[in-house]
Image 1 (tube, protein in one colour):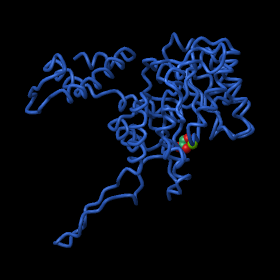
Image 2 (tube, helix red, strand yellow):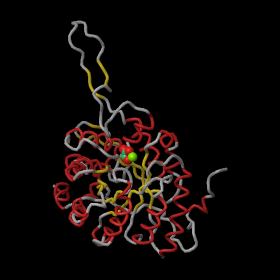
Image 3 (cartoon, rainbow, N blue to C red):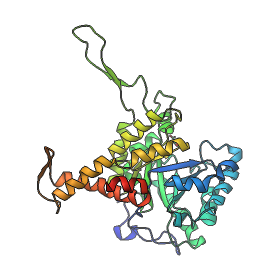
Image 4 (cartoon, rainbow, N blue to C red):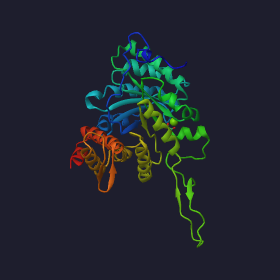
Amino acid sequence: MSQKAPRQFFKPLAAGAPEPMRDLPVRLERMIHFVPPHLDKVRAKVPAMADSADVILGNLEDAIPADAKAAARAGVIEMAGMIDWQARGTGFWSRVNPLNSPWFQDDVSDLVLKAGHQLDVLMIPKVEGPWDIHFVDQYVAQLEAKAGLSRPILLHAILETAEGVARVEEIALASPRMQGISLGPADLAASRKMKTTRVGGGHPSYRVIEDPREDGGPRASAQQDPWHYTVAKMVDACGMAGIKPFYGPFGDIADLEACEQQFRNTFLLGCVGTWTLHPSQIAVAKTVFSPDPEEVRFARRVLAAIPDGAGVAMLDGKMQDDATWKQAKVICDLADQVAARDPDLAAAYAG
Ligand code: GLV
Ligand code: MG
């Protein structure tokens, strides 16, 4: 038997470390906005960004040059003290370097010891199996005890290796510290030897085509979503484990239309949020990952039509029953969470 006994699962992994959380904190995490923490000019904008994004993440991994890794780490620690993250209600995360890198150990120990009170989540890249999570889990527990933290720091895995995708369920279940999983389409494409040079989104050659037409006319053809399988697999693994699935980066910053479509496909499949790499993507993520006011109004009517959640009703010619009540509840619960943080949307949902 390789699984921990249920009674052991919620015991701290180090003497003096906080108890693991039984439920995830209720937080709106529609976008995780990536900040390069070594750049003074960008860091100075963090307090303003914390008002527009649900989560701010100080990135230490890819895109940060090797000679800036130490400055980036110091930058995240400085960011921790720039505002009162808890009071502001904005998530404060960091993406550390991978476990096999020369920076991982110092990244995690510096962040937990010097910024642990502010830090909500550590994002761990290139997770290949539950053993990676177990190692980080134990290491973070020791550091939490040393730092005297009372609130556990959660872990978020990036799904970006073929091995990780094959083991996504085990990763999702590896620890009560797991908060969620993001798709990492760039590294995953490389790991799987997909023939693309893009970061997320579709590909003009990945498409379906209509059968030959009798009139010999041009055949209809449309691009398909190459990420559909992985996102759906990740959503199921996260749903099973009671943690949150996220889309990751969309690299074509200029193409906000394609960005919106990629975000929307993952929202419809069950993801709760996405990464944003540029301020212009924050507004896109906000639109996509907040439910549509029209849909919220309809969902509220479904709940009202079946007040105790069981039975059947017809609304505008559409059959409603216990299952559609549950679907409507997902939308209404999300709308309530969004309304609590976003006055504009609160008004739209109330109308
Ligand atoms: C993100 O880290 C990715 O590799 O897409
Ligand atoms: Mg990556």
